[in-house]
Image (cartoon, rainbow, N blue to C red; front, side, top):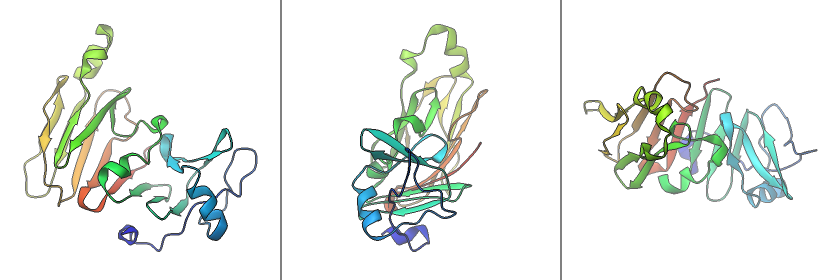
Length: 198
C-alpha cells in the first residue's frame, strides 16, 4: 500500500537534539529509530514540517524527509507533500491542527463527512467584520471527465459528490494566502498530495 508513493519508504525516527529532529540531507531513519518515532505520533505541521512528540515537547524537522511507519507514510521533498494511510479519513488524521490542512479561511476547513462527499465548515462562527473576506474565497473541485464543481462561492457551501475511485483536486482561491491552495486526493489509495507554497 505505501509503495504507491512511488518510493521505497523507510520510517521516521528521533536522533534529535533540543527539540529538533536530525537535519540530515534526506531524513530516512530505519530500525530502532524508526520504531521509536513511529510510536511518538509523527505528523505534518505548518508548512509541511514533520512533527513528533519528544517527551512533553514537540520536535520538528524541515524537508526533505521520507518516513514510513507500519500504518502510514509521510514524504516532503521540499516542493511536494505526500501523506498515505489505509484510508482518506486516516490520512487526514496525520495532520497536526497547526497545519491548517484543507483550511479555506482561518480555521474553517473542508470536510469529508462520508466517502465520495466533500463539504466545508459553515461561516456561522465568522465575525461580521470578516464576512466580506470569506465571500471572496472560492473553492473549486475538479475531477477528470467532469465539469469543475464549485464547493464554496460567496460564502455559500454546496457539498460536492465525487468518484472516490478517481483523483480529486481541490483549489482554494481568495484575497489572502491559503496554507494549502491546491490539494490532490486519491481517496481509494488513502493518498494526499499537496504542493508546498511558501
